[in-house]
Image 1 (cartoon, one colour):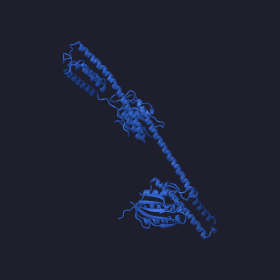
Image 2 (cartoon, helix red, strand yellow):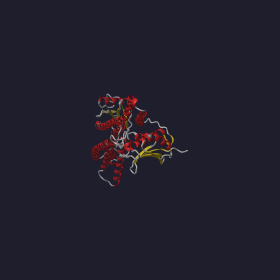
Image 3 (tube, one colour):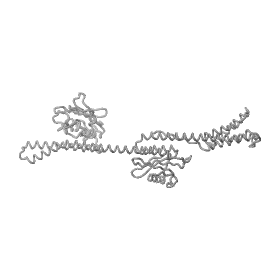
Image 4 (cartoon, helix red, strand yellow):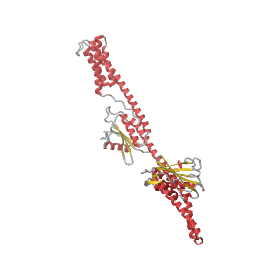
Amino acid sequence: MTSLTVARRSPPVLFGYGAAALAVAFATLAAVLVEQQFPAPNLSLVFVLPVVFAATAFGWGPALAAAVGGVFAYNYFLIEPRYTLRVADPANAWALVLLMIVAAAVSGVAAQSRRRALEAWRAADQASALQALGRALVGETDRSGVAARCAEALAQVFQAPAVVLLKDAEALAPAATAGGAALSPADIEAARWSVASGIGTRGGAYPAGESAFDFWPVRSRQRQAAAIGVRLSEREEGRPEAPERLVEIVSAYLSVALDREAYAAQILDQRVRLASEALKDDLLAAVSHDLKTPLSTVLFTLQSLRRFDASHDAATREALLAAAEAETARLSRMVESLLDMNRIGAGALPVRLATMETADLVAAALDRAGPALAGRLVRNEATGGDALMVDAALFESALVNLLENAGKYAPEGSTVCVRCGRQDDMGWVEVLDEGPGFPGPPEPLFEKFARGRAGDGRPPGAGLGLSIARGFLEAQGGRVEAGDRLDRTGAWVRLLAPLAARP
């Protein structure tokens, strides 16, 4: 957070009077020493110096005290008869009167200059604090942080406790305090009245007679209600003449920041809605296209068996039932994939880790993916390998999805190879095919409903295989990597999972 400039404080009053008395003492000593060594006229001018010093450093009161003290010291130590307050020579009496007049005039001018300098310094500090507030709010992205920055700026601008209250779904409540602010029930009630009425309140005055804070309402274009409070009644230097000007600047900053946060929330909600709609569209496009064929096949089979059963021989009936069974299994796998994707998205995926041999996992996956690999030469090079610490069902399902993808994209007669190995503290199982490879970077194909080929000529499926594989592996502490083969004769996808500890 950007540091805000602290406003300059005036020294304590008693310290100023003490410093003025000490300055008069030094001036007296200097005048006495000068007179003893070098008798000189107009030594009374020496006593103007403490007046100027006190006026510029501490203000009118200590300067006037220095003027009176200088007159008495000059009379007592330097005017005959010495060490008394009597004046024998009328000329000396006039000298004392003139010294008093000159000292008073000088103290007035010097004090006025000091007051203006302090006001200029205070204004510069306040401007610096407000600029720092503007810079600090740029990096704040939540309501509590915005309120905290504004409360700190108010406390340093006014050198008084400050508070910012924000209205949430229920009621107005303190969001941030600074400068040691502590709100009483009367203060909170005064802040709520100020926001409800749209009028500022003054601590100790009607209708906030029991409140110690002044409150100002803040409203933004997005109807973000807030209140700013500053305890001005207990300031050391008294209540400022027009605090509203500075409060309005902070209120404007607060209003803009709250609106920005509200707009950001609206944009986020809109993006979520658009993403949800896009996901629904993708789901509808994927499912409607790929459900049509299996449902049509099953329907045709049932209608044919019902209407023409007598004219079908045993072989024809067997072929029709086999086709219906295959399409029903395909439909079941699609529904299962959608359910798996829903479980991954909901974070409701149960994981039961156990030590599993790589060869057993690969063999089970190849057996399940057999129909999808029909017409391809399958080469299993994962007969050995290290044991993995995985959930057998999830890892096997992820590998089945990769094998089915290879069966979809690899041409008939090509080779699909499965092999295994280890990489640091991870074991891996890799599927290689001789298909067209990835059309671009593989990462986008791990998204839901992403397809490796566009158009009606694409292989059947909902585009969930790689996404499900990644979700299953990440749930087990693993990951998925993919890319094109070095000879550009296909693609490879690798599942990495933690190695099991050997006894």
